[in-house]
Image 1 (cartoon, rainbow, N blue to C red):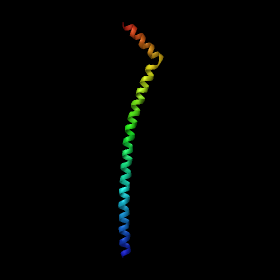
Image 2 (image 1 turned 90 degrees about the vertical axis):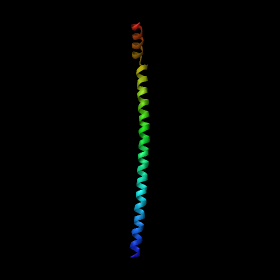
Image 3 (image 1 turned 30 degrees about the vertical axis):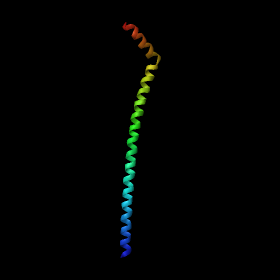
Image 4 (image 1 turned 180 degrees about the horizontal axis):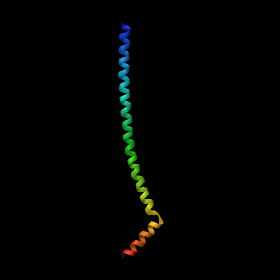
Length: 73
């Protein structure tokens, strides 16, 4: 009878430890996803800025804006 009680106690301890480990791993994954989300937002802003600059550096855009400035005067 003692062997069964010992086995039950050990199994309970193992289940408790595994539960703590799983909760910890879930918290780490959630923290990583939050950081990844913030990095992706900043990358999106950078991509938008680069696309905007690239549009403004095209020769047709530059010449059309220059000609538009002279036409307005």
